[in-house]
Length: 341
Image (cartoon, rainbow, N blue to C red; front, side, top):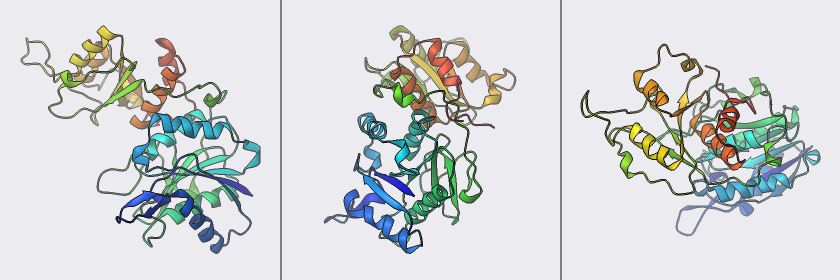
């Protein structure tokens, strides 16, 4: 069995530099993964390596994501039993969502994104366990799709659907997704893509801006650049955002998301609201604030994580979709990305 390891950087690829800081150094750490695995008894696995990136993942940009997608487009899928992408944890949920969507239907074998909470030479690191889980699943003939195996602080290695993964919360190194389960109990998800988007995408454009709500937000401070074609506006956990008014009779203030919506309407920028659970398609039980935002023209995105919604919107506009085409694309499942809740 031959597996391609794509090194992109992150903690799993770091070494300690002369200042005592962790710095990306993939070429010096790549052998640590294979050597440990061979000691664990996987002697029949052959590895090949590529280094499309060598960065700390907090330095990920759309330009670098395009470089990663280009590296995938140059791979012969028939040559490998699986691909493992070594990646940092900070932006892992964004990359895993993007790859889930763009590579769906590309080939019939799994792609695993593997990271580590500590550098691989640290005995506390979970990177070796995460890597071994990926190889073990590949050996078992796990089905097509993009997956993230990751050992949480409870000692369990969970397998996450790449498009369902959420960012780690502050003050924890654990990952969560809606349908996570121990990796040996996991089943492949269904790929719905009729054709792989990677074949149609020329490049991922920086055309979508994200805004997250918080108490006291001042929308007058936001001025989208001329390249922005859409804004993804986040929501509180009840799928709400502020529509504050000075009084019942007065108009809304600069603290209201409706202020932003008016500015964007004048500039021809689409505004989307996410995440909203599927059941909120029905009007009953929806908060009046959410209803007002949607009624005034904010477009709801249902059943996607914020990370996946952001990447899928960027894909839609980068593919040249407009108006109803974007709406249809956001509704159409490509890689079982919808959260069933």
